[in-house]
Image 1 (cartoon, rainbow over the protein chains, first blue to last red):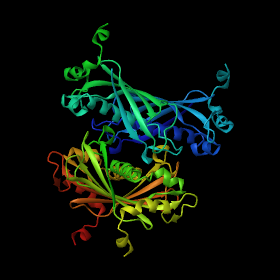
Image 2 (image 1 turned 60 degrees about the vertical axis):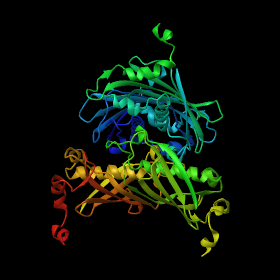
Image 3 (image 1 turned 60 degrees about the horizontal axis):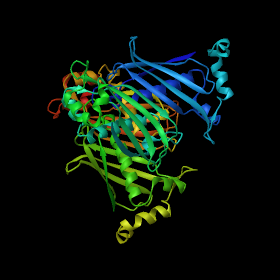
Image 4 (image 1 turned 30 degrees about the horizontal axis):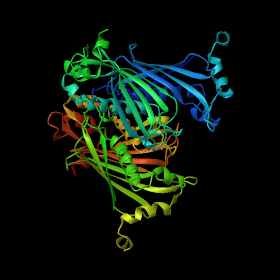
Length: 142
Length: 142
Length: 142
Length: 142
């Protein structure tokens, strides 16, 4: 398991007419969070792309439990629970700083595609090497 | 069933580094599409809010099959399949103009909440009256 | 002079905590408006890019006179007043449908750059040919 | 003078088809930067709004010198040069971390308005009290 806590603040740009964060904005927070998670294990998205692959999203979802407000300080708890075979699945839970109540939960699923052919490919070896130490390989092999 | 085809064009603002529409942007397209769907049956979101309720999203999801490109003309096929009892569920499918291939499909689920208490409430009578003619009531009652 | 009236509607995605359109959103409306202006004279941005040039913004500004509200139907009046020599300047004025009061005015200035070198270049001949019929050449030559 | 260096990272959400930050995104960075500047002198926007005023933007502009790229770490140098009499003017300059070259410069001008009447008002006393210590009052009085 690889996890990362991404911190962000809610600004006017994020808030809608109901006075809460607009629903699509969480997907931007998720992207920032997963980018920082990968960077935290020395695996930048830029590096991944230099290997000739992209990591597009094939599925994304979000559950909205309670609306975050202007100037709230949020933490996006971000987790990769399984070493990707073909699909990379990332889970998110948004809480306020110093608070355990989940405001929003979500998930994104990514595939690796060849930049030239746009065809799905296995995760590059270099990516797996960086991720592997965080997973229980015995469990993965079962 | 109530349905509406919302047309939009892809601009630079929507495109990311992969040259395709950024994943969260579809949720903005969905919002525009459902707002126009409701307006098409003489039910603006502004009118609904004047009844003292909000219609926040409690769940949203999206499947990304093929990326839309810059200056693509898109249609967001938008459907309410069931008269809402508590939750309003809206389905979306994004295609290019003159093309049946679905690039993206998605769904949003909404609840009606009282603006003052933030508690869930039943859909206002005025909303149901506008929606009812589009649904087979016998089927709804089963 | 080339002009175009671009129509758009204000959605939740555009509105901030003050209940008016968030200030940066007008720049997205401007982009859509100028893209449609160019398309209206048979000059798509995609076509321009296929000539090997990009049209990045070097300056943009906006004056906010009155805030547009949710579900307002807006027109972005978009004008190119001079045939570009090096810089393409575009003016914008946002009004509500059926209303002459300007809510927002703005301007964007663009240069043509070579996609490979990123150096500024003269506007491609094909671009000038499409624009020319709309300008008084005698005046331009003075 | 009050100044603040706001740090941010460029994500996919910010990048457009040219591979650089989309022009309107800088205005979002500016908003985050000025919100953090005010918070740094113990003056949150939320506190200002609780005094019954809003701080809408009346003018905003941006000069684009060089495009920021994906995963660039940026600093938005943010400065209030004068104690506001009626208008609050804020200057911005965006640089990469560990680099003095300005990629983008900008300015936003704000007025204080009464939330109920939407009429311009003088800056609230509580706002001026927080800002005053950072300005040379003799110079201000000239």
